[in-house]
Structure formats: C-alpha cells, structure tokens
Length: 296
Image 1 (cartoon, rainbow, N blue to C red):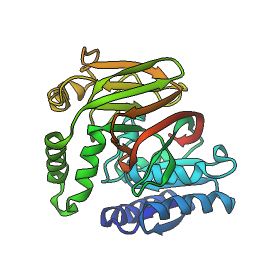
Image 2 (image 1 turned 180 degrees about the vertical axis):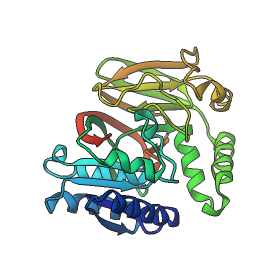
Image 3 (image 1 turned 135 degrees about the vertical axis):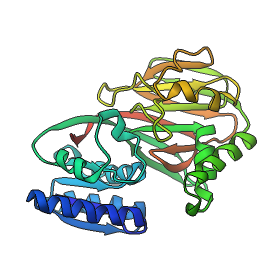
Image 4 (image 1 turned 120 degrees about the vertical axis):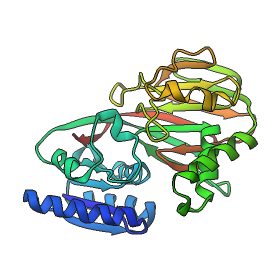
C-alpha cells in the first residue's frame, strides 16, 4: 500500500500522520510518498504502478484524488491498480456518492479486505492557460461556465480566508459572469441555446455536499449532462433543494445522458473538474468505462 499526500497542504500532512498511525495499529504494511503539488501526485501514482505496487491511496480531497487517478490512468494497464481514498479534513464530494467516510480512523477500515468497485472515468480535452492543448481525466464531476468561473475566482483568493474564500469567489463570479449561446453535441443528443453553465457528472455531489446530479452513477458507462438555461440566480436559489437532490426535474435545467460530449460556447468558458481549474472551452468529454478499481 502506497500513501500519496501533498506536502504543500498542512492539513494533508496532519491527516497523513493520522492515517499512518491507524494503519500501524491495524498491522497493515504501507509506505508514504509526500509530493509537492498535484503534478507531483500524478507522477507519484504513475511511478508507483510502474514499480509494481498495485494499491495507491490518495490522502486528501478531490483535487488530489483526481491527480492520483490521472497518474494511474496514464499507465499501460490502470485497471491492475486499486485506488484507495482517505479524504480526512479535505473536501471530497467523490466519497459521498459511495458513502465512504472522511475520518481517517474509519476510512482506514475500508482499506482492509478485498472489496473493490470498478468505476468509470471521464477523459477531458480543452484549452489550457496560454493557449496550449490540455488533456486529462476526472472521476467525479466537471462544471463548465459559471461553476468554472466560481472555482477560478476562488483559487485566486488567499487560503487563509477558509470557508469565506469560496463564498467570496461565488459572488464575484455571479456578478461578473455573462451567459452565452452554447452548442452541445453528444452521441445521443445535441442541444443549442443560451445558458450560464453545463454540468458533466460522473458522480452525484458537488460544492462540498450538494447532490447536484442525483441520477448519476460512476459505473453505468454514461455521464449525466445538466444544462443550466435559466437565470444566473438559479445558482443560489436551487441550493436548498439541491442538498438532497430535490431540485430536479426543473424547467430551467435540461437533463440528458451521454457517452461522449463536446461543449462550445460562443466565447470561452472556464472548466473545473474534481476541484481543479483545468482550462477553457471548447472541450470534449468521453467516458472510459470501468477505468479505475476503487477500494470500498
């Protein structure tokens, strides 16, 4: 078992120590790899599988989990490896879909035994900052448009603001973002119209606990596409119902499912996937069936 954590994140460093202590108590063999940043996590996961280790555990939130999964998917046979997750105090919406605990002592219990679940990943291509072509994968959910703008503004604010950081990022994005005409093309359906955002969901949860796509399941070979065609105010007026996934059906939200999808607004939109600001549209998405074996 190889634990991967981001040494640049003091919360993750503390959680890694807690996970290590719990695994020692349980008599489980492991080694730890402390990396610097998400690119380091991707590289560490790739090297772990290449060296012959098969059990990789991401100790951190959704951005780190996504980075580790990307490294696993870049190997020749990613399904030979197993991905474990211990979120600790870091935000993770992915674990909510599977009912996995965040607390290290309880989460370590799920690292024992042989229970694994094959889950889909989603391959994403878009434009990175500076105009370069970007390609990667995510496990949970991507937001394009207003949701991506929220993540971009939030990432620019100091981490020391805590939960206020996302609150401020949200309202700055709502105030400055402009809806646009967007063209969506998939293997099952196409759609064109004015919207302020598109959700491409493999998992169910987003925004640290909102059940944004309650019909999604990351093992059915599809992503659920939610097109937000109503006013920008919907981004906060639906939140109370979205906690339990009761905001759907909604006349302001177009819902459908797809294996492949392209998104091209009339002007570039920001994209956030698994908590990471990836780039801008135009973008394409493709489901990779049963790409990762998740330890449950």
